[in-house]
Image 1 (tube, rainbow, N blue to C red):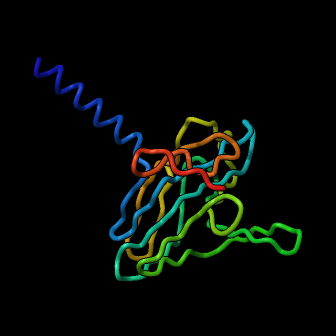
Image 2: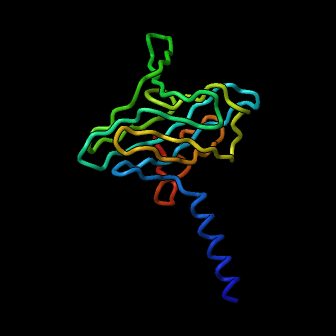
Image 3: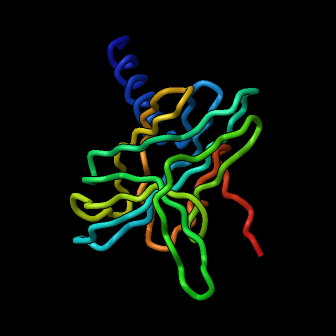
Length: 164
């Protein structure tokens, strides 16, 4: 009986870890890394998340890597009149007490170039974030349906309020 309870406890702990949506690296909290699903043969994709610096010292996201893509870069996106422009950036500053939201539609994001297969809704893949001071942290990126805004989950286990 003890062995059965031990096995059940390990399975529950593993399932909880698989569902985790936030990660810590020192004073940095990385919340809900996600990507939108792509077509099966897509060669590019993007990952998004929120990074909060809860400490009193600035840090900087300086690199990203994943075995799911040949190249992984930090990008920013902005509108230039009617033209959407994406540009590679060298890093993302994380001032003390600040939160940086990487989200679809504008601003910084992680660009996956040379995808090894498309990204299918329901799967996940590893991504390593490299910070100047906090070091490297591995996160799991949940692949959500196309058009997802990353709001299907909240860190408190309830659905977020709908936005008008």
